[in-house]
Structures are given as structure tokens and as C-alpha cells.
Length: 307
Image (tube, rainbow, N blue to C red; front, side, top):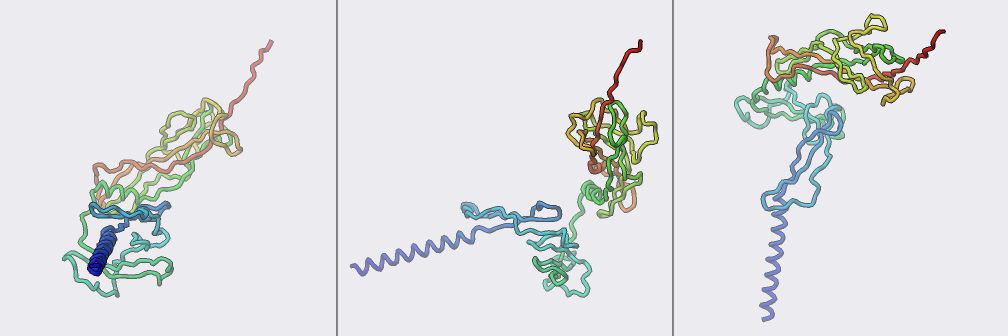
């Protein structure tokens, strides 16, 4: 009797252990970690968000679901254009003298390229690992309005400085002239985006004096105007109060108004060399904001009577 009970107890323990092992094993393989790229903290970098994906009824484990690594630095790995894990990669369409991919052509329209990836910790030419692979049929091009946004981004913006006169200190009610030093009146041309090219034509300056007054719309002024000092220029503003309460600092450390401005270009597009009107496309291209501290003083006068 004891022998039979011992065997039954052992069998029950064995079944329980097998069940526990099976459950742990099934739970271990039911949840998977998925990685998705997200923009990194600095320009040109990509980080990866890790998420645990489980089927219905299965609770994810206690492991962290967000990771900042691995990171992929595209900017420092030219000519890389995308990331594969933590490795910067790009496709090379000139495939000679590489051999064809080992796999058959997946679709009639597929072509093959060579993927080159820079392995982490392996700088130089030897660090690039290549793999010939098929690229599927070309997808339909994006809508023209999306192409227009991309084409606009191909325009290289010039740098400029917000200049003003009088420079050391202007005076209450005296016209202060503003202009964008460094800009030209030439048309800016972007590089082609799927045959679409954006052209930016100088349009205006938008100047904010910094004393709480409204934005002033000015013509395209890129040099100091040649007018008498007491007269208004093409882009001028007479401050009604001194800058004693200003939040900026002038060159001498005196309180100043934080004036700012930006140049604005009008946009047009050409598709394969022909002008094209695109509904929903951007019509203007604002430039970067320029800033300058303007010190405004008051002229004290003394009135006496002559007798």
C-alpha cells in the first residue's frame, strides 16, 4: 500500500513539474520584443523604442519597454541614409562587380542593389559590410503637395544678420532703420525632388521691434538706406520709450529691446522644367529668425525763460 502511494505521489509531482515547465516555456515564447526607430535627441541620429508584444490574455513581463539604445548615428556615417539596428546603411545602385543575390527575383519589377552597412566599432572602409539583395517594385510617387514640401526643403537658406542704425544707441522718437545684412535679391533654387524644383523669390522682411509693438512688414532691405538720419527709411521704427526696462543687453551692457526679424520668400515650382501650380503646396518660405539688441535712450532738455 505504501509502495503504491509513493508511486502515485511521484507521478503527481512529475506531472506538476512538467506542467510548470511547459507553462514557463510557452510564456517565454509567446511574448516578443519589437524594435521601432524614433528620432534621436540630436540631429542626424536615430534611436529605437523597444516594446513587448504579447498575444491576448498574456501579460507582458516586468522588463523595461523603452530603451534609448542602440543608437544609430547617420550624420557621421556618410553616405548612409537609413538605419538597420544600430548600423548606418545605404543602398548602392551601381552593382558591378558584385554577384547577383542568391535568392530568385521576387517580382517581375524588382531590381537588385547592394546594401552597405557600417558595423558599430568598425570605422573605415573595412567596416562597411555589403549584401546584394532585391528591391521590390517602385511604389507610386507621393502626392505633388508632399513633393512640394520635400522640394522646398532642398533650398539652402542663406545666413543674415539683423542690422540697425543708429547702432550704439538710438533715441526716443528718432527713426531707427533696420535691414538684413547678408541677403541678396537673387532667386534661391532647390535641388530636384522627383523632378520637382522649388524657387524662392525675395518678398519682404517682418520686423518685431521688441518693445511690445506689433510686427512691421517691410520691403526687402539688405543694406543701410541712404537717407538723412532724421528721416524714415524703407524699414524704420521710432521707439516711443527708452529701453531702460528692456530685457536684452546692448553691446555696452545697457538695457535694450530684443528686436527680431525674419526674411520671407515667395515660392513657385517647376516640374521637369515646366511651371506647375500645386494645390496645397506652401506659398511662402520664412527664413531663420535674426535678433539684435537695440538700446534706446532719451534726450533730456532744459527749458529756461529769457527775460
